[in-house]
Image (cartoon, rainbow, N blue to C red; front, side, top):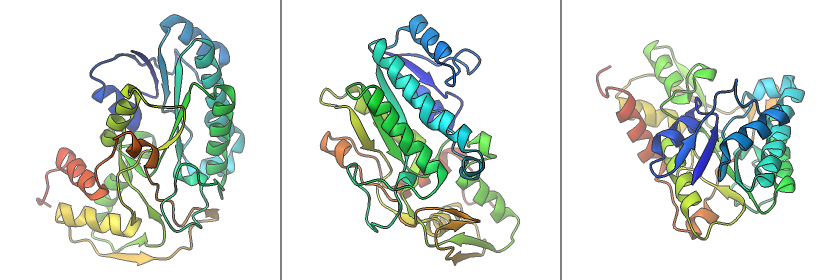
Length: 290
């Protein structure tokens, strides 16, 4: 199988490339494949003739999406449509990614793939629009993976580090930390997500459509931060706060844990979130020496 990977420098893209063992994988730079340009997309697919196109690129900065919806839709929606359509024309499967933020959080139980989306901010709206656009452009040749709270070994450089790295830096300052105890999520290690995705691509019974892939279980960001400090042996003071799902003026779903029902039916599961967190910290930090 020939894979064309977009977004190789991101947390997820880097782990897909790292964990791919059996397929020919090409990951062109942004200067070669610009997802905002149909001509660039067509040229890349014509040149590489992949069997699968995986797009991990997205505009994920929630405040920026709110301030600049045109850019949010250009990257998260229009590009998804164009990539799916081009993949279909060249006979390739398109794989895109979406988010727990397509839901409003009112369900208060892990969301299934066929639950009705209802985003409450521009980021979620643009990602949901991208889902509809990609599936409309290539309904029989598109897989969309919703996931949640990603962190990985490349540390989310575009965001100045991922959630875990930022919390560890804050612990070093010994200043009391407030962390949201109201938002329930399924934090997901991109190492596990990338392996599950590759399993899905290799599965003989995979079908097009939407899949949820997250580390098993759920927790608040406060509980997740407590686990980081416990595993690391840090003694930072942390206080849970209830922000009613708000980050400034931007609404976020209070409950956005996801259930991996479709992948599980194929025998594809991800480890529990705490297990994933322990492995991430073990791989990236010297534990208990702070």
